[in-house]
Length: 621
Image (cartoon, rainbow, N blue to C red; front, side, top):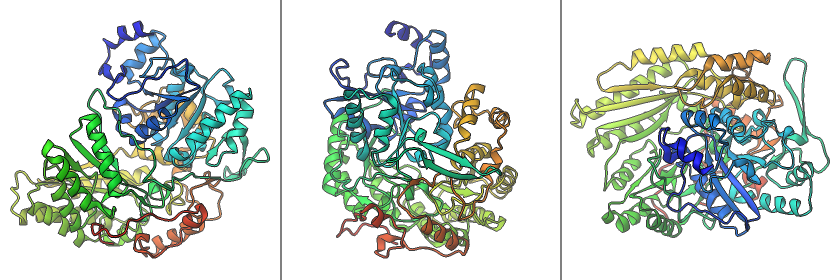
């Protein structure tokens, strides 16, 4: 393989995507390691290497003496074509061994529009795509990540899904695999053993029934001992959890080329559209001492010159200000910068921004999400126009001249007045810049607008998506409203969001559509230059299914949802209550303030939020 690989690498873009050998990558003794795993990221090297979860799992498995983990990514189009023409199967970067030689192959499901890449990678590996067609000689195919919380569209292809946080369940899964192999269990027996592990969903062990009108009737276990509901696994002690002190340093520029320091897991804000806010509840903060040590270790072992404080809402971390000050005091003399991925819309954030940009100043990003207070209350965003204007005025006054604003289009109850609100906000931000004396030639406000996609396990899971026509009309309306010298307007292809919604709300029947779409040539669907909408429509049509039926469907509260057998810890009653409060425009308090909104997660998973006491750096509630 090595000779063939060297030959074709001369003919592809960015050959370093496929060579491996990066600083801090691990190559273990293949012959003397009991369990060999491949971590498969269904997108390019640059995207996958920016994913903190990869570094965490890589460190976790390779810290075991009895297991190894190597990486593989979706080869870009030019590389795939050459691999197929030369008969080169999908391989890992560490040893350049075929993926089919591994015991376990784990995919991460970060985004629905990577599903066809998973099928393509299995095909390129020389493995049958359908789980039912794989035998004892083939690797176990597992998958985890946020999209595993509605696993049904991928159920035909994946042997077992891990639900929840990988650090908590992966060791048990490896141990069960080892024991089953020692006992010479066959594949079916192994799957039964895995189904007994809390947080592992084995779709082949469930029967799915539908009503005559196509609605889902039930998802029920086929065997005794297989749980009716699979409950997510959760890391209780994030502070002492294994964390990669020696992360792999990518050989080429990647999306996030820096040290990623996870300051907390979870978010208390309760935005009603946000799936991650539910899946990663409750909030669990790390101690500043742990974070300072991890930052120092990672900087020393990588040579990076930037630390990104990552989490769903970093400005909410109770010790954020003293942590940033301490990190900069220790490392800024060496040119090390600290960055926050996004900021809350409040003046507090500007104080943070000033602090973090002692070394380098970059564009500030805020996410008001909606244009009017009414709609921000519907989504429970909990910020006001005054917050935003105050924040950007402070930012312009502090020397920034470029601001990015994120909004969503098509949110439940949205009207054209809400779209006017987006345009008015953008113009008010421009005026704030002018009022602070920013040169009009340099002043820039970028308005990025994505389309709302209803996701499982959220208060908006029962909602339909806006139709394509509605989304296109709204995009055009905003385009007219946002014309102005200092405003840049970006928006996403609504067709991609439409298919994302169909898959996000989909049931097991969509597996056949995915298979058909793959065979028609769909891949890299999240990349606009590769997305083939007409082929997706043909795939649905060939199977006699309608994507609009899934994306535009409004569920009733008592309908069986395709993901009801997956337990994210937050009760369905709470989500329904939140949905009703959204429609009524009522906000729900942030549980960080001590008042419990009653989502049900803490008692059901026997856990409590971990919020450090004594910090004065937390954002206002």
